[in-house]
Length: 580
Image 1: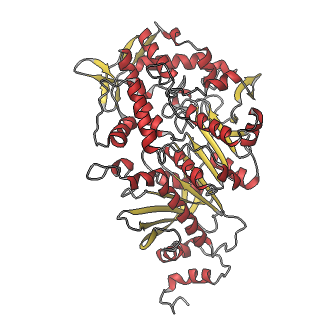
Image 2: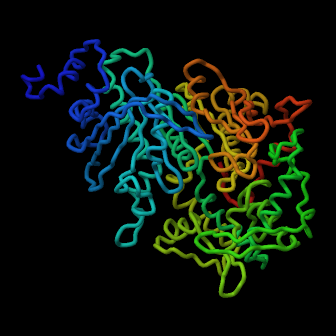
Image 3: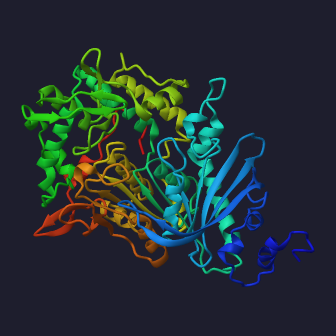
């Protein structure tokens, strides 16, 4: 048949697939350009999407080792087909590149895994793809049509005429991940059909953290049961708030007229960690109860205590050694940041990082000319205001004259402008729930990039919107049947925290999701591994919210404390519409 059609020897395995012959093909047989071309989704599969067979690559990789480290599992002896292909969108000039790791047929476990990116990148590249090999999952990622794997949204967001490129914005917001998922699932089915023509179940999953977490939520909020389960960490949703909030600490320093060295703020944070360490009943260098820390710790206790740090380099600028004693002005800055952004009327605009998270956004820059520290806008907060709001390309942003009310106005501008793309906070997940989907959502309690309370605000909104007539306990019982949230004590942004290295970290969140979906094991406690210290390697079960950890006689219990729960959920009364 193959020769009659002029397809050649490489196509014979796929022709047997078309005849529904139950054969077992080797990696060598399936990992060819011709075989992958034949397994591509048809041009008619997804409206407006046209796969380009001539731009397919395929090469076999054998005996590969996945080095998971502290944030993921490791495995070895993995064999897979490294595949890329490109597709065009009807009526548009941009091309989108997709990248897949397809396990050898004998290692494939009827799973597809979609992945996302971080920051303004829509992909994490090979690092995310290798994680799927641990679970025998065909794993995919996309460049979003941004022109290559090293490009992020910032490189394509503005057109040559200075206007916003909404095609790229929507691709980043949700369409590119959606297209990659649908095309990847179809490619996976066809790629393995010859080895497993009638699988009992084909499972699909998503895993991502930070921007990758937001991208996962963008899919289940819009497309319901597109995945059977998702593992989502520290999602960067509600970006109108999140990105502007990065500028709150330097604006606070300017407003209060004091610019502390990073060393002075680090001392205040170190004192908070030491003072609050034992509030969970265990002294281990980890603040597992930042809620109790907020309720009971007084930062003024740091006033007058000495600090001493060697010279350091930050953002390419070298700062001299710093020493002195903590001032009342520095404590006021710390307390203002911990309290969150408020407008000139004293109303709450947004939340901030909790006690024990480092003051990354408050890091001042040393001016060697004046010999003083300065508050300088930087990072993604600067990019967001310039690119997204002002629609200009600039590497600087003056904070002169910027007030708390200015930040509030920028937030409101972003809410109006990007409500259907970057906010990603739709709270009604009924379609996903009705399709049997499962969510494990986690957030590092000492995350200095995305406040953990950001996740809690969303989780609580889902509970209230989906179970409006149910009592508090009943609504949580219903929600926990398919959506669980976990705070990770001491953890930083999407990983362990060097300042609280003894903290447990969940290395295998996706594994817990898979067990929940495929075996019905609801993770009332999420497995986590202690990363350092005398207890290194010890397994701890993280408490499912709203329960909080409390050690009693060497045993970890999960308890309920109303005042602590309330401390995580402030009323954002400065915002004129509901914030989900």
